[in-house]
Length: 181
Image (cartoon, rainbow, N blue to C red; front, top):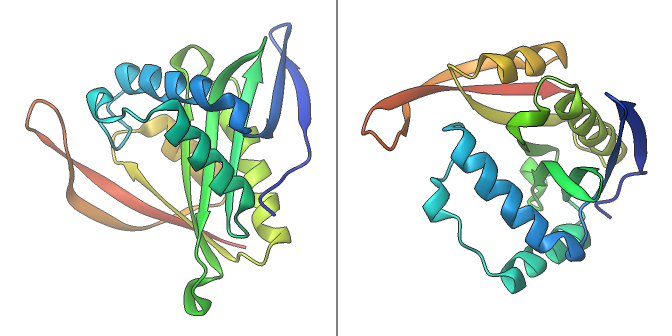
């Protein structure tokens, strides 16, 4: 059920394809997350903590595709996956209306509207699938992401003090944000 229609558009003479993640993308997705993890501290795991096997990643992708409450969308150009957006929902009746967003884009492709396209695809899917509340967490110093989320209608609901410990032992606060559909 976690499917969107394919979206193609052109940025800087490159065709960007927004589509569902597929099992065949497993190695590309592992490489993407490892690369983004080295480019930024904004992900939840340090690069050395993300070590799924290709088989484990294939199973994860298949489970997302088979789920009625989850969505996995990728951005691809020239056969390379450059961004990913996940929407993780809930099967419990009391919280079935809510889901949580996750987003990662290669640094080289940030600021081109790819994250916005990925998230809009996820928001549309959520509307079509009875999800009326989308939440996310973001570091308080991730200004570019916060700006995007605010433009899409998300609101800051709270601050999580010392939410994440960085590799140097320092802490960063986080915001919880939500979009009510």
